[in-house]
Length: 397
Ligand code: F3S
Image (cartoon, rainbow, N blue to C red; front, side):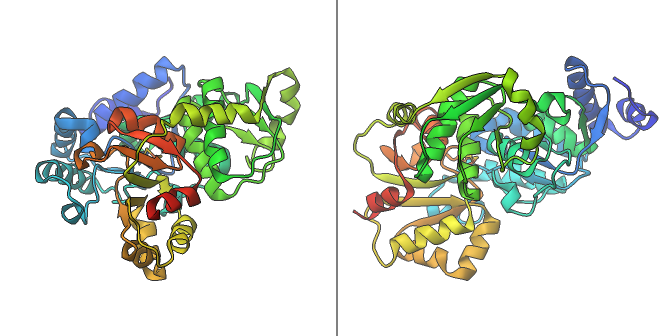
């Protein structure tokens, strides 16, 4: 890989051990993937923030980086942590867990990273422009950034996104190149999508078919921003898809139309979606309703507040969002409306990366296939997937 004099000096340790270690990681990855050089990134999004996921080894790794006085050099945001960092005590997170999670948060703060704690950084102040190179971890945000915004990022992991944030660059390969962004197959829909939860099921179904390849979704779809957020998350839950194309949605869609004739064509029918929903739903007794995978947007919080009205939630209802969106929702009165119905609007964390299994719930109703994919293994919860308004109806009935 070609390195500039400055990059070689960084690798040789002239700017300290932290930068040298980060550079070594990027150069190694670049060489594995035959990148020609590094490219500057405009921002980074780091995953692996929850103490539940990283445990003591992760905490020790981060402490070591802090001891080396590591600092990020580009605007950087964070994925959800393992708890609401401001309201953890009143929600009921355990002291011991909280103490470790707060240490993780302190380390990231000392590196100069914004305390965003969300998987929707593009809704919380870190929204790149079309064509910009970025280094994002968090599979749902990666798909959204590549496919909806037209920014360019590989599927970074926690350590590599942190290395990119420290160096301000990433190896130039894969989704950062024209070749790496070509669709490999066409998915044709033989029906109309008319419910938001169908976008979640559609993404999950396509993810299973596509693996790590890039699909061009051929259908007369006009998804909303919230539906695209949902689609992005579920595509990356069942598969390792880094991006998708939809005509009129993906900024580069017109540029690849000519290439589609050579691609394999696969048809999806409505029953494929029903099969996906059945596969992820166990239809048993549920005592918990959780919404916000990915984190809720302001318009979703508004909808939930309106659906609840003055009714009281009889089941536990937890709604997850970023602290950025929560603050705006507080000003608009949505948080008060939801919480006076007995629900909770929780920020900084989510149903999958928090230790939900410690709260004694038996089963969760959700509107997200991604949540239903992970909850049985990460939180020992059975799941049932429903449309948003049915989730709220289940909470109040
Ligand atoms: Fe976000 Fe957690 Fe779902 S990180 S996409 S809410 S699993």
